[in-house]
Structure formats: structure tokens, C-alpha cells
Length: 248
Image 1 (cartoon, rainbow, N blue to C red):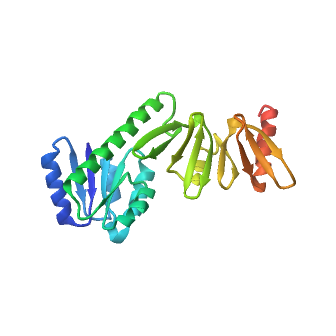
Image 2: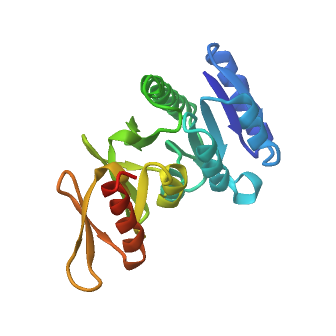
Image 3: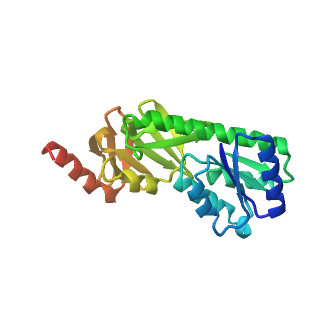
């Protein structure tokens, strides 16, 4: 296991590194105490686990946590903060665990084991999916310590509700970490069409477009599900259906 510790307190950072290296001989431990260069170190090392100080760079830990998550879905980030009330923000930013100072070493070890397990689980799932999918043809769902890889070909639609996005697929529904705009950026051109500010629908899952009144439209999926269509997306959706009828 490769671990990168990003901790602004250099003395504390050195203490953790020394103890982890002495007690976890199977682990490769690296450290940095400066925000500048931390992301570069992460990119170079490609660690399975990152221990991240929430206050690094005068409180820019959450920003770095999101950036790490955007760059690598296989890295598990454990955030360390001074207030338990910061836990929700850290988890929303993509952390798999949150530790409160003063830190007990036993709790640190538990968090490392959990993060390593999650990272290994995601790598295993990626290898399984990679047999039939390209590296960018899936999304990851991470909930209550469980990781799941969902191939894009199995997804019927994405629904955005509040701060969360739900992937509706052939086996059910799962919450995912990516915002709708990023999903559209990654997959929209080939796989999905925008039907509403809160919805993306798989092109192959669309059965028909139904109008009920002048400004009310609904897209019907092959499995019977329905999603509202906003006025600005009606014309592109009609063109898609016409192209399909014409063999385009």
C-alpha cells in the first residue's frame, strides 16, 4: 500500500510517518507539509491512500480533496480536521473517512485499513469492467464503504436531485459522486441526451416523446419510466427520434 500524508503540521507529520513506517512495514509512506507541490506529489506517486489535513494551505483541504477525486477515482482520501461538524463537507468532497483531532493512532490505522480496502475494491472492479469496456465507459458509486462500478451501457438515465445524482440502470439505482454537467461532458456526445436541467437520458433507452399540452413534454423509456422534458430540449430530442426513424 502506498500512502501520501499531506499535513501542515510538519512535526506531527514526521511523527505519523515514523510510526507508520515502523509498524506497517508493508506500506510505502510519503509526506508533504505544503499545499504547493502537494498535488504534483500526488500525481507522481499515485498513492492508494491520501491522509489530508483539512487546514492545509489555510483551509484549502476540501478543494484539494475534490481535485484528487477528479484526477483519480482509485485513490481513497481520509480527511483530518479539528471539528466533527466538518465531516459532512469532507465526505461531500469525496473523502471516504473523517478523523477529528487530537488523533488516536488506533483510529488512524482503522481509517488506513478502510481506505486501502476501498481502493483495492475499486481497482478490482475496474479490472473486471475493463474486459468489456474502455477505461472511461463506466461510473463509480461509493456508499457506506461499498464500491460499485456501473458500465455506461447499463445506465438508462441520470437524475439530479439536490446535491446528489442517481444513476438508474438495469439492476436498480445508485448514487454517484459526479455532477450532471461532468457526466454530460464525458458521455453526452455518444451515449446520452439532455432532456432537462436535472436529467440525462441514454439515447438507446428512449422509446418515444409524449406531449400533453402546449408546453408539457415527457420522454418515455423502453422500460416504461418517464422523465419530464424542458422546452429548450424538445427540438433536439425530436431530431434524434426522427434521425432514428430515418436510419440516421
